[in-house]
Amino acid sequence: MAVGIFDSGLGGLTVYERVAARLPDLPLCYFGDNAHTPYGVRDPEDIYSLTCQGVERLWEEGCSLVILACNTASAAALRRMQESWVPTDKRVLGVFVPLIEALTERHWGDNSPPREVAVKHVALFATPATVSSRAFQRELAFRAIGVDVEAQPCGGVVDAIEDGDEMLAEALVRSHVEALTRRMPNPEAAILGCTHYPLMEKTFQDALGPDVQVYCQASLVADSLADYLQRHPDMRGTGTKSVFLTTGNPAQVSDKATQFLRRKIEFQAA
Ligand code: DGL
Image (cartoon, rainbow, N blue to C red; front, side, top):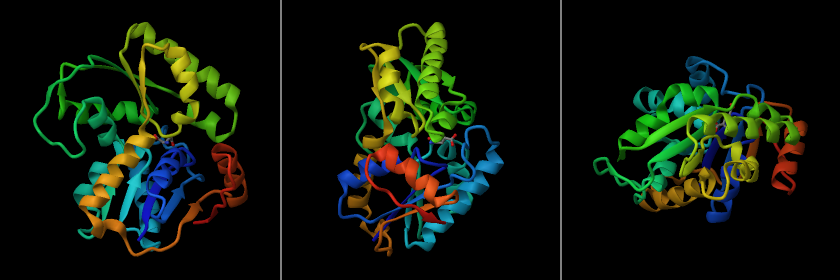
């Protein structure tokens, strides 16, 4: 039994970390497409074909279920993959839905009609590709009415994080928060709609102020995955070992991952 976790690079490790803590006995296979990161500035066709290649590689590791721990891939490719590409004995799930279920105070998998919810003004921080897909607004509209979403494409933040340039990442986050709050001065909630951003959560919270509730995907995805696997135990797959795969340079990616997670992580070539 093994579950796959896919990201364009290192951001999905924020999801990996929470899933590993929540389901310690579950082998996890991580795939980082570091050779092609960032996805956030690519066009949807490109994101679709890169994501399919990565997911196929995780199937080879015996994962029947792959989590796209990447909002950009979830926004630009997931629906098309589910509609026309994923075989019937496999599943690919994204990271938007658990987040929206939490924001709209729903139980995991509750598909009842949209209704009024407490939160009315939501700030969304995501990559340019995620913002322009409007996938977040579309998924939200299935579940809630009367919510105003202001989205900020956070150009440059993923590159700065992948390069390990924390000072630049921090400066960019502050300027993106300032740009958004000029258009929506008092959001009640902020969504960190990119799996790289939890690494900058403190800066987002600090720039937004203490009254804004910041939603991070990692633990929400871990909880909803635990619930999903309980309902679908057959999706645990045949793989038995945990592995970290990258399309980038394994030694460099391992160093950065070790720095992010503050423990030794060893990637191997995908
Ligand atoms: N971490 C990813 C996301 O959640 C991808 C960022 C990127 O590659 O641009 O969107």
